[in-house]
Amino acid sequence: MRRSTDRILTTHTGSLPRPDALKALYIKRQAGETVDSGELDTQAASAIERIVDRQVAAGIDVGNDGEQGREGFFLYMMRRLGGFASGTGWKRPLWEDMDRYPLFHAQRNAERASKAAVQARDTNPEAVSDITHLSSEPINRECTAFTRLLEAKKRPFAETFMTAPSPGILAKALRNRHYDTERAYLAALGRAMREEYEAIVRHGFILQIDAPDLALERHAAYKGQPLSAFLEFAEATVATINDALVNVPRDRVRIHVCWGNYEGPHDSDVPLADILPTLLKAKVGGFVLPFGNARHGHEPRLFEKHRLADDQILVAGVIDTLVNVVEHPEYIAERLVRVAEIVGDPKRVLAGTDCGFDTAAGSGRIAEDVVWGKLASLRDGARLASQRLFRH
Figure 1: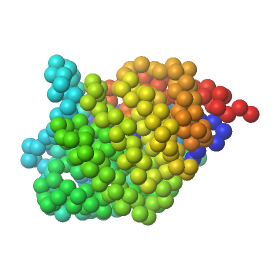
Figure 2: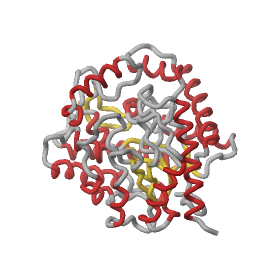
Figure 3: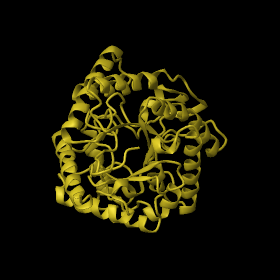
Figure 4: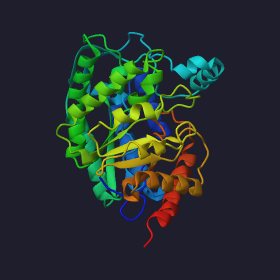
């Protein structure tokens, strides 16, 4: 995994804006309408090429395919896993902060109803039989096509990553109606996701495991329960991830943890202090954490007490992915310098975003031109921080 050898490298968290035509196809397919697979593949391939060029132009060093070939950061796995059924009418629990602010919740619902997007919360499938990984062909095809594109463009990034969901977010977003215990369900999901994880690394990419469950589910599935109940789930999920990574060198994987990529009060979020000791048990080479927002911007200081291992990096989110404000480069630089001072080594710090910009197709709150403005400002802020941190 690349370090910031002589300057602060820039990256992001995964999803980037999808073209309208591609979003429309994903939305149609989720609604049960017939979609021409050839057209979808063509649109996705074109979108991936475009998104690579846009990242390079914005100054991203560690980039990806923008998740253009997927309708959402975990829903695409429903075509790669067996054992799930749809149409049961089950909906995920409402987040605790939405319970506490009903006027805001009503406003948000009105906004969602007026927006065409793939829905990642409503009427999700459920596990009704043994979970299986149906085939490695889709992930291998995805990786191979992206590799060919990168080679054609002369490898434009310093390093490239691909994302995959954690077993924990699948377990909570897709209710278990089959396994006797949650541990058994997690273990089955971990065995299935191991195929995806290993394929990504085998093809030469950094694996990013998207694990919002390790923070988000405290105010979702575990709202109203003791903190200990949530921490037990988090510990089990990290252990499951570690088992799934048994054949993956830790320096080839980073993990992203967040409190949910939605605009909201977030005053029910579990403090990072409560979960960081558990997160640090993950056998990974890097952590991607959201410090660019007003709720968690103070938490990098926790790494003064809970030190990273010498071989681990921290991707510090310094861009808020939920507000249409382009952060000033000086603001970004100040935050990056502070994180580097806390970590103790600027070479182990990368500049990143709090979360993705379009985690489910059409769900992003940031106008596309503002997205690229934010990433350009990330580049400029990283340059300023580098001038202060790497004095020659």
